[in-house]
Length: 111
Figure 1 (cartoon, one colour):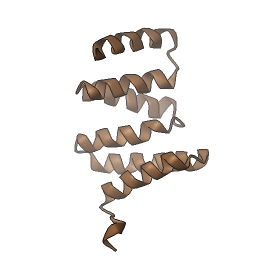
Figure 2 (cartoon, helix red, strand yellow):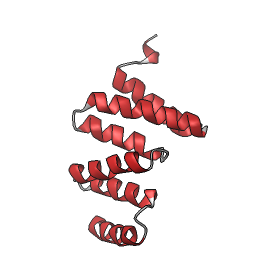
Figure 3 (cartoon, helix red, strand yellow):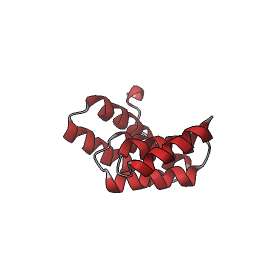
């Protein structure tokens, strides 16, 4: 099923190469399939070409963590928080702050 989705997304992307959602959808499909290198390529391309696509930051950061690239994950979360703040997107900011704090080892429930 995922291969069918990927085929369709690639077809759509051919017609709309600058659509950030299509790139995001492909990246997340590749994560599901365990194709981390391909997912990473699409997520990093999104950050480069569409830095305001706030959903990318959470998933790219999580992928970096999975790959053992903690510092890059932290930087990605931090950059995503800045984008969410600019967009006044409280939901994205809250999610990014939670994973940022977790990656930093900050646990407010211990207070």
